[in-house]
Length: 450
Image 1 (cartoon, rainbow, N blue to C red):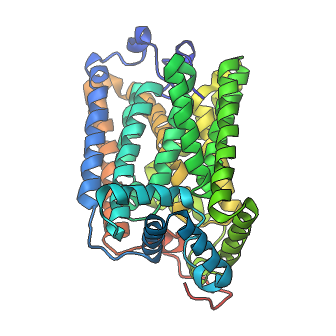
Image 2 (image 1 turned 90 degrees about the vertical axis):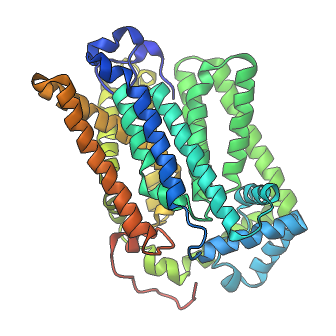
Image 3 (image 1 turned 120 degrees about the vertical axis):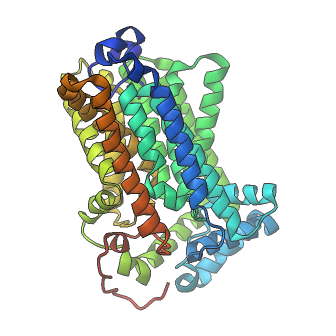
């Protein structure tokens, strides 16, 4: 997944340029020197936005209340409480199954731990956890962009993630999506950094990678797939580069995460067979859920259309980033030389296809690629920005950068206003595609109330 310094090209923003070649691309030293400050300012602005949009007294959705109740059961009764919740699901699937399933023990464990630390056992604890996870995700995105993307792409990436309406929405809800976004971003960053580390630092990183994998596999299917993709990317890149140590580490981490996950689930629910049965019951009941049939259904085009409506610059930039990454991979000396951009493109495409095939028409299920879309969008927008700057350079370097900065600032302000006016201030309690797109509800095929 990561790229070697020798493979970084100064001619495009998809990959960072070596220090000695910086001025071949960005000849305006003032512009080059302030990139770090732009990233820092964007990250701080994103944190302030999340804090300002956080409201303790907003109406809470059924999912938020269910997660809170399940976490309290885990705190009060231990793992036997989760087993009891599983038995309730078996006895009353149509009543209990319309709420989030108790098998998502990874997130419930994190939420219960946060409740224990803070002493807050209300639904507000879950919202606060989401806020903390959201801010941590933004910091990780800034770290990864600064280290693995070119200057222009890195600055745009952090700006886009700072104002991303999805993140602003999940950062004040007691859902698991903010934690899922953090886990996905952490897995991507670890996959990029692991081959660079040595000694104790590498062993520690593999341990963190394995723990993140266990939490992913025990939380939700989409983040579990994200963990498998990150592991496959880390292993595949190591094989192509003939890096035996990284390949072995990735394989061991995957095996350990799967074994630990199986042991945890079997001990909590009285066997893996019982866990699988609970999962099937939850999926069958979800398929008959009137809310999902009314608001979270539709043709495949609705998913990209919803992303375009919520954050058009991220959608267009990510598409451009994918196209550029795939195009450049054909001219690369080897698949491994294509590096990070191609890996991010493949990661996002696979997870979007999984979401479409599984008919999860809800932008909450897109959480594992929130930050990846921003990185790809930063790369795509960065490429266009550099090309436009070259065209406008006769007007003056500083003037050209000022015009481009104003355009990006207006686009970022549009995302903030959309998130505030349409997602936050309207009292919307979900990210199902039909409400997001303003489409009328579909006709449900069952009469089971949510």
